[in-house]
Length: 483
Image 1 (spheres, rainbow, N blue to C red):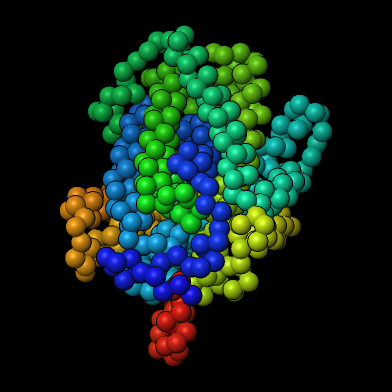
Image 2 (image 1 turned 135 degrees about the vertical axis):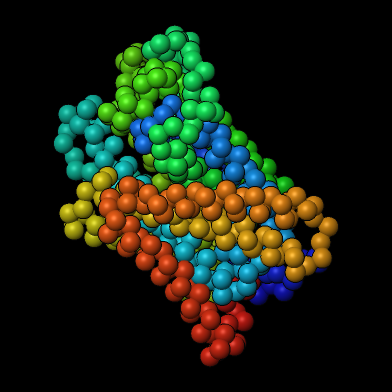
């Protein structure tokens, strides 16, 4: 076990096993991985129309700008911690550094559960869209779970290999889907949309009409995944520079693209009627705009690239979960077997296999239970994961301030105190909105209550086991989450 420590603070350094990982990821490759995780075309097709429909107004561009600003402020403290905390545990590492090992273990458990259930939900959604595309273009009626299983198998092969392989695949997928979105945006804006270019979607006074909290909530949902930059710290060329740059670039790209696309959708549907039209058929908005303004060829491209977009999203989160497990195994939370590095691939290949087996088992059980892949599996799991990750961001904001209050450092007050407090306030409002409307995300108040119970249980389980070890087995406690 490595005993090297940052000379400024006494926090864990990277483990010896983490040091064996491939270190070839630069800024662009990490950006490809995390931006692919938010599935830009998937968001444009599925999430942005819901921002209009549920928000009840045409102000989606402002909601995305607002979400981007809050998350940029959050990234100030988040990336600052990457200079002090050397391991790649991201949320749980930063929470541990600021709030202690018990809270860190709780955050680790909550993060792992949140990302796993999000991955399962995405597999279900991918299976549905892939099945629809196969039927439309090949005339074959293939069950959604077979399509999801095929994607899972291919992702298993990619995830087992060097992260460079995944980065290249994700880079190609991201460029193609990004171009598809931009082509539709330009086509709509160049033709003036339904009633001509309008400033209404950018009018701040309109943003408070309807149900602005719901619109803002789904705008934040579209960003989930950007925070995974820090998870790839152990595989970055120069982590202290690469991680902050990749994080800011990812937020800027996501926010900019979503703001532009939501404005184009508002113009394409007609600013005054965008909410009503999107609400009538939210799942078909992007495809219909592509057909109407860019032609059938672009419409076909959007339909097919939506499948590759969701595939890339699943691959990204597979890699994120793999590395969370790897770091937890080397932190003595999970079995050591999971924390081994493949000698040839220089990747956490065993952890990848565990993720594959677990994903297949959970997805198989849900399929056997007869749950609807979109209305139940995707909606419930994605809603729960969104809440879990937002709670982790809240904890991280608190941890950044606590970390710096207990230590002498030369970090700017803006980075270490003011920005984290501001991000906490902004995120607290969003969490309140999510809790208040969770039944809309997960399909009913009963399901919402179970989501809250499940997330609370996952945090308490990790924190509780660690707290018990602190009292009953000090030696075991000393090894938990230590490198």
